[in-house]
Image (cartoon, rainbow, N blue to C red; front, top):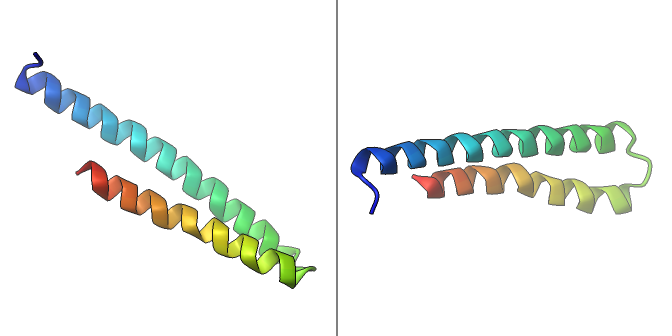
Length: 68
């Protein structure tokens, strides 16, 4: 059985790890969105891609809130 201090430490590490990967996902997603918008040559194909890529930051914020 874990002690209270160990549980708090594990919770803090979970926040740090999740935060790191969430930040990485957001950076990659916004980079891809920017690249698609700069080279917007096929709107019928790129518009759905940009919409899908916008789901990544939204999902990361929701999942971060779920760790609370």
